[in-house]
Length: 93
Image 1 (cartoon, rainbow, N blue to C red):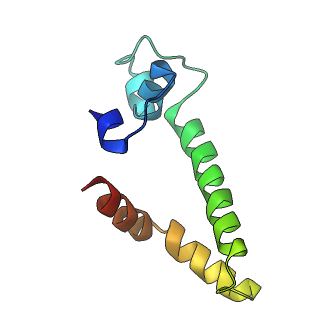
Image 2 (image 1 turned 30 degrees about the vertical axis):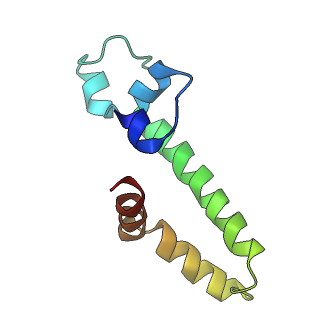
Image 3 (image 1 turned 135 degrees about the vertical axis):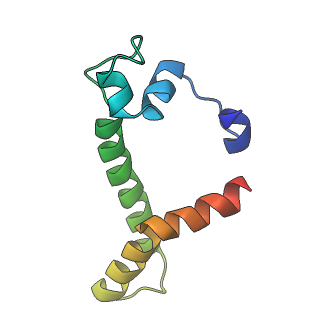
């Protein structure tokens, strides 16, 4: 169902399961099949930085934000919790 909504087929279903499983579930052994070395929190850290890099690249490529200050403000707004919620709801609705 998630893959259908996203329009994307994940190649590693174990990694997908880990990505959407909270660390507490792993610690409480509610997800015994998942690798405890990789946790949701670590993937969240990595994903957040990859997303930040992609947003930075897109903003930098536009002529609209021609100063560091404008780039920083736009980057922060897009990556804010509310900014991501708006984008996700529009794409997944």
